[in-house]
Length: 266
Image (cartoon, rainbow, N blue to C red; front, side):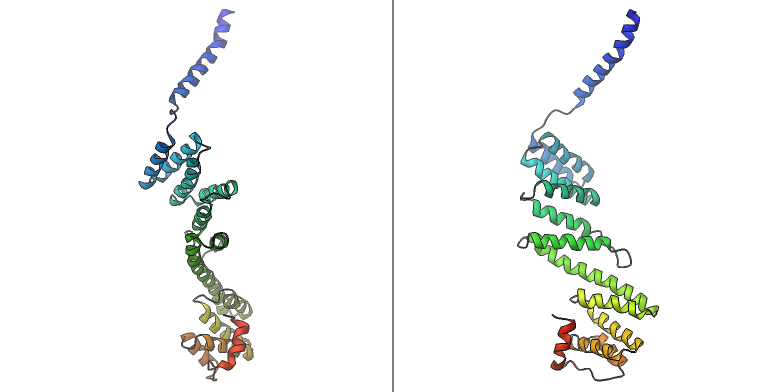
């Protein structure tokens, strides 16, 4: 009987010893300043994985301090630099939800937008992340219009719009090459109407002229050629459209102003 009791107690003693051993392995609490500075040093050394762990330790040991909030943001930044974009976005979403009025909230929105922005690929690929970048950058401008983040977001929004317009042009050219002119027209019109301030607008107008001429809809072709001539009289695309219209005169005269406003109201 004593032997059985000994066998029963022995595992418990072993577990207790292991537990005490694990406790002795735990790092003793450190000052929040030291923890945070150590994390920043790792970040400066570009040791992003270790920096994330170190910032999370600040949050764990000093969860209700102002330093913990800073560490939460910096851990997201370290994840961003380490190209862990999904992790960064998830953490940032949680931060702005829990701390909507914090001083770093504007930066959190901006950093989230940057997580999408740096993932933008060439126009030959899916543009889902480009659209996400556009939405996130727009949110920054809308919520924090007078900040430095909004100023930079506006610049990047122009680049994003140009990229999305480029994707529409690529698809439009594909349809045009396949002689699916109606599908091509739909794509080129998106550029003209939605991304009219981008560098792709002159070509889009010219492609519309080409497509409508192929369909035999000469009045629409001439309309877009007139718009092209009014807004981009020195463009090579206008010269091409002029030639396509059998050298019909399409001068950028003031008389075309009403027509232009209906299509490109800038």
